[in-house]
Amino acid sequence: MTPNDLVLTPKGVRFAQELFPCTVGKSGISSDKREGDGATPRGIHRITGMLYRADRIARPVSWARPIGPRDLWSDDAERPDYNSQVKMPYPYSHEVLRRPDPLYDLVILTDWNWPNAIANKGSAIFIHQWRRPGFATEGCIAFRRDHLHEIARRITQSTRLIVR
Image (cartoon, rainbow, N blue to C red; front, side, top):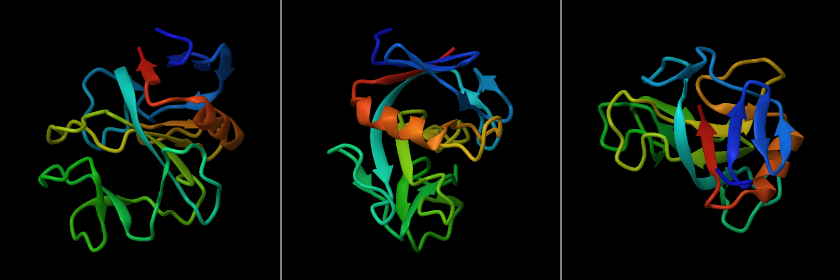
């Protein structure tokens, strides 16, 4: 572990000698993550990218990519592009990245079940904004908006998310 790692603890995520409150999946932490189970997968996850809504916020870091109006994330385990970013039109099961609410205004991508996704092992394990304190996610890690933006500015592509 390094000070640059995001380490999930029972009280939040420890990062850069600070503790940030967060929420996790509604089913808690799992060592056997499955698509749609609502669990946050246990493990050491690398940061693989960052997406942001350029129409709502400024680019948080130079390596962040804007979310376009056609951007989706495939969660169809039967598709070869399962657990990856895809574009509309996409007639298979997916998650919309350009949401009307602010939850995905800033999204930090992890390498959970990527780049060689195994069918039904879970998709779209992101770090994003929470709805409110204590409101669980579908498996992601979520933070208060200002904390998420602070973390995003300070992480690097060598930062890891450690979930024990």
